Amino acid sequence: MEGGKIEGAGRPDADYRIALGRVGRLRGRVGRIDFAWGEKYNGCAAMINLRQKLLRTRESIKGRIDALLASPKNREEILDALMEILILADVGIPTAEKIIDNLRRASKRSDAPQEIRTLLQHEIAAILTRNSAPVNLGQPHSVAMFVGINGGGKTTSLAKLARLYQSQGKQVMMVAADTFRAAAQEQLTIWGKRLSVPVIRGQYGADPASVTYDALQSFKARGFDLLLIDTAGRIHTNTNLMNELEKIKKIVSREIAAAPHEVFLVLDASIGQNALIQAREFMKFSGLTGIFLSKLDGTAKGGCVLSIIDELQLPVKFIGIGERETDIMLFSPLEFAQAMIT
Ligand code: GDP
Image 1 (spheres, rainbow, N blue to C red):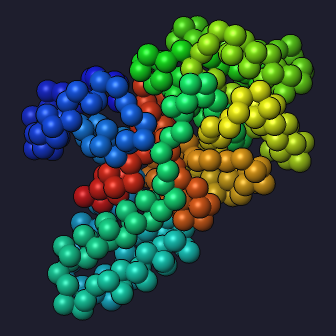
Image 2: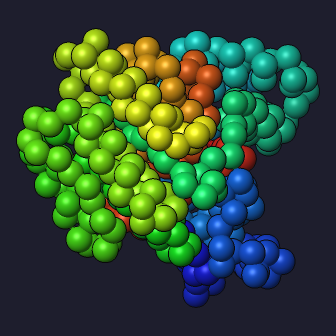
Image 3: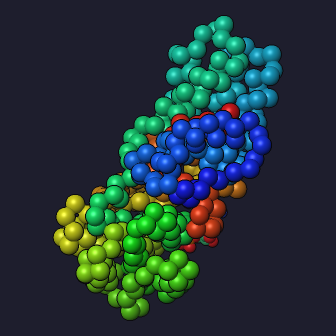
């Protein structure tokens, strides 16, 4: 997904022709991403990319649904088997039950299998759409914090967002506020060099809030557009960590009115339902505004996105679909539902 560049160009398949039709209508608007506009942006040929990246989740859900709907089962048998398919794709039991209950209410005994598939897609999209909210980083001095446990993909996701906004002509700055992990600071510095984005880092063991304060002064003085703050994720000292995050947030809001504009909880989709357990710890931190769901590529557990949205009552705003800086997409509920089961 790059501004002005449509991924998948040159593909001869039907999907691509449909996408091209839409791109034609949307041309001129894709050059500069309006971040409140994820639906339509992803609606371009990036959809083909999404299907490819979600391949394992798609195989796990769509593959099994195709086989099920081709079998001569009645509606009740189909609904029971669908429940099993959803649970196997890490949708989680409470959310899977909710989907099947709704499906039972919405469908008729006489419905053909294809009608059940359409209704299922609708139910999945309804859950994914719940709580959705636009990305709030269009302010003159926008600030986003990234929180989540170590190894979840925080630093990489932050770098991806830096590149995305940079590609839209924004001046971006990054802060390594995990001062106790030399490797984390080093990793962000490497990303900074690679992307030509300035990185503010403090002494080893320095107070993360004071490093953030210094970064905010530089950010304001240089008139940059977007400040991205990487934070620590050592969950075993949970109380300290939550206090530390609150302190960083307080400094940010004291220095820039209405900031931080976004606080992303980065969750690793490849651990499926365990991501929810981690997320519950971070729900103790007051400021979360959305989820950045990383590592959706290469996992069959992508169904966890449904229970994450359903149970945490937070929107998923971005997804990570690979290790490169370009492997990021705005989350589009309708297209995600489509890519999962059609
Ligand atoms: P942090 O400790 O939370 O900052 O996590 P990192 O950013 O260091 O990421 C941990 C590992 O996950 C690294 O090897 C990243 O390359 C990898 N990673 C991050 N995001 C993605 C993604 O969307 N897809 C894949 N396949 N790997 C990812």
